Length: 291
Image (cartoon, rainbow, N blue to C red):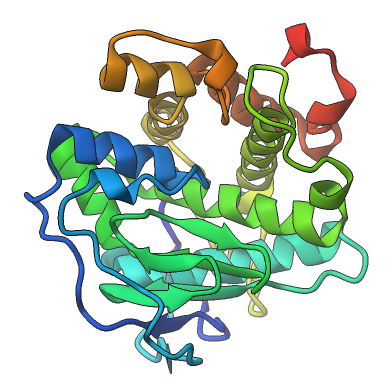
């Protein structure tokens, strides 16, 4: 999904922070990439499987530096950091319209690695939401790891889907969903799976409406997505399905250990939100066989 070059994203509040200790692109290997993909959309921390993952905990948290180079849609089209900043502008605008008393999360672009209250943020961990900080962390070099080692295109729309999914977890946090439906273990009908599928649906609902969002000058932020871009986003949802990851990691599928949902479910809930909006995203209101 391409930004209109003249769109104004100069009001972004995204910050950059880190210490330049990212894993090299060729260092993780196939098993490491499985760990990265599991982590990509808020999964468990499997970085112990990835050789060379940066340690954490000693770097003091800081506000980081503003992305002063990210002013226009053209910047977002040519720079992954700026695309994340543009996504932040759009997501805050969207959720401000749909959640009473909306409070935005912090958005941090990670340069290598940085410590957080939820552990080290880096491209080895992938994008994640940290509830106690109400913050989203993402190292855009993660997308290149996906391209180089997993054969994924990790194109513009799939990147926005990933960020939108993490924002979905923030919405679940501030609206009380996480508190109401706490972790109750693994399995195809678990709260964890329902939480992740709802975040997929939220990301789809946002992207289904996003071309209607305009800056203060009346310029649409984004151009209408192409069919290829939509397919790319659906492919990203497929890639991070529990069954797909388990098949590649262990050669077999165990639904009782699911934490995020199957590839088919993740695609379906993203597509449902994309086509039908937020009103269809209550994954906690349906039976397990409807997930």
